[in-house]
Length: 124
Image 1 (cartoon, helix red, strand yellow):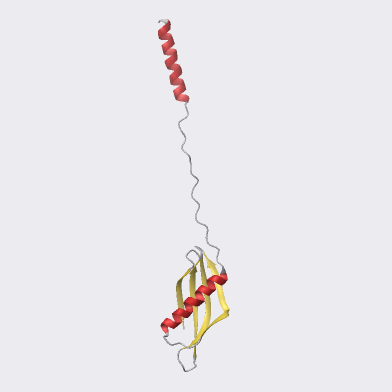
Image 2 (cartoon, helix red, strand yellow; image 1 turned 180 degrees about the horizontal axis):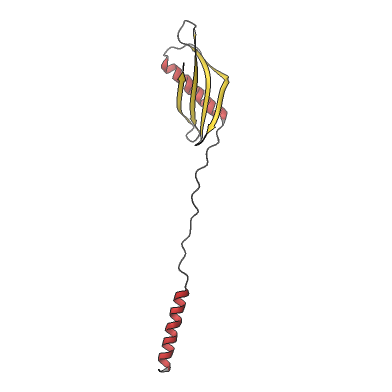
């Protein structure tokens, strides 16, 4: 074997060895996306939004109600998963001019993500 062919074989072997050792290009790994943080529910904000929605629902069900009273001391705000707050409470209203009061209980779901009331239920 000639010196030139031996050098060619050695050069080829060295090139193959270097190619095998070359590190393939790395792709940047992205961290897994974090789930969005649940909004912090401010109880007074949830209660006020629900009080307005409850009053509107009473007016919708009874077109000419007299005074509507919501008993704030009976109101409870309970946080739930998903940025929701459940507001429960009691109230009274006068259905007409007879001055007879009708009592009711309500449950309201306040969505902290949208800052809106999702549902209102009244029980007479």
